[in-house]
Length: 189
Length: 109
Image (cartoon, rainbow over all chains, first blue to last red; front, side, top):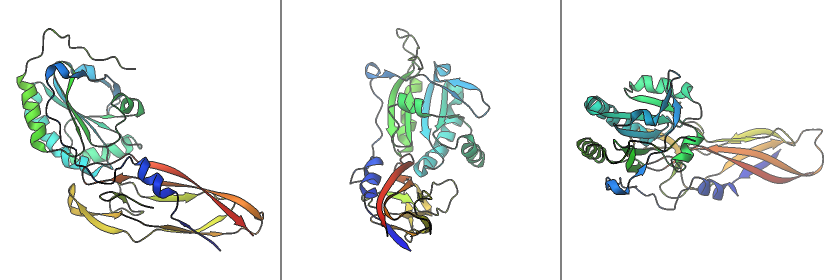
């Protein structure tokens, strides 16, 4: 019998490839950026659970909470009930939540998870291309608040406070669309 | 393996099906895998899972593999090739699953 104990080179690889630092950091949710500093949210075309293609640009004129998540992401699960509540409370006010699942196993993993939790907002299946458009998505959850003009008003990486989202959503809903800026999104690749 | 303070990976047997287990696999040749032994996992509660503890590995740990030498194995130097799949998190965020390739030189006598 030949015995090998794997305790060697994998150590560094595991640490580095996870993109971890030696100290856990709680990423503070960013407050809303001033309008002039906001950049266009990259447009994408992704399928929903019914196979329908959805573009982010379909939501122009609405405030959008765009949540990149996965079923294997524990912190994401904490935020999901908040987002359900936001959807219920604000869907008639020009607001929508879009959840983009980054699961490798696709709808096979996502559909039962969503059904079990009664997710009431639109879910799309993400891919590497959309991850690239949004800076790589090296950590989940990554959640963006997008204003009515399609600009990114806030980016939250990691588990954030519910009130940070609430305050941001309400502020964006109060703000009217800027008529001097066409409600256009950056073209999808 | 070594994880930084505050980070964990799911054990090889997470409590919930949707979590991605740590898994070490080896190619069949030139040695046959007899057993892969993972360390004893610990149940930990996190900010995002305050009620249900997760089965995790943290800090420094080893994964041991016992190999059998096939009767027809060639004597001499060989390379064992394996893959380690894992998915890491800290208390506020998770990182996409990764697969690390392992290459281990051995001498078959």
